[in-house]
Length: 341
Image 1: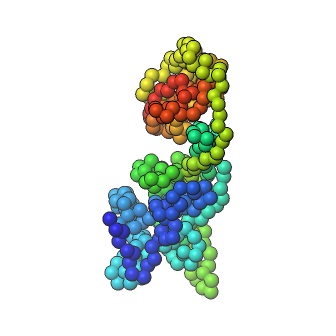
Image 2: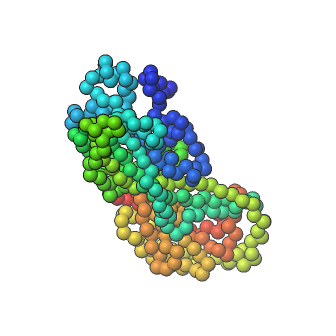
Image 3: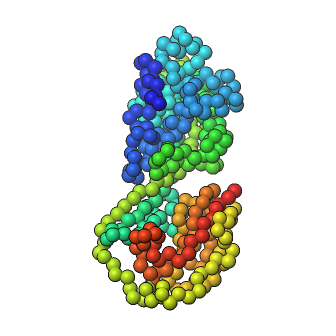
């Protein structure tokens, strides 16, 4: 379905850097831009009268808050909708150029995120190539600044923006912003969204008029997956691995984890494993769902709701894939499980 063009005299808000049509694959250097773009489109879904989340505002805020919309041209505001106010939503200073009322998304810095055991979430050798996936996780500090010519207007508009980031983000999208088909996500903070005090500055050349501002500060998580590969020398599996596989022996058993068992989100889950030999290692199919400790005692750490698989590998066996089954030859045991609320 074609997207309707913006009103005459009004440029599209998401050009040239939208979430859907820019940076398809390797986007680690665009983490901050994508985060700001995601927040921009999220706010637009509430402030536009045709936005997909506009209905949540209509049922929860006052009529004064509903007057701030983003889809009006100058003619619309003055002639067609005198009770509505054109609100400028921008990610960069150049997009705003001092027009009020406005909501400006400002980059306040970036912090390193804790990726867990290792940034490398998957790696394997296949046909003389090593392929892997790495996790990019950063914390983007943003300040969403509201500015109007009125103390009351700034109070109302900033309270609405605070409500959108706080209560509505939990009710509408579980504080998670994703784009279909993209290997990244933006997570709004579970807590810690703060609003500063109101402040005012005189308008240049007009001592009677004031610009009233308030900033809503939040720290967003940006997480993406990048794929890498490099050539490697052909590895001949050691004889010891083949002998050990042929000789067999008791297979490892996870005594307290059954296939498709549900594990509650929150506390670490201690695993009781029998017949775990020297050279065996544990892994998880999706570290975004759960993590596993790298030494005994074996703890399964739930991260979020979803499905994953617990793997037990043998370092004595070749790590390449079976051409017939596609399964790694060093895989000893796999148990699917679920993380539940």
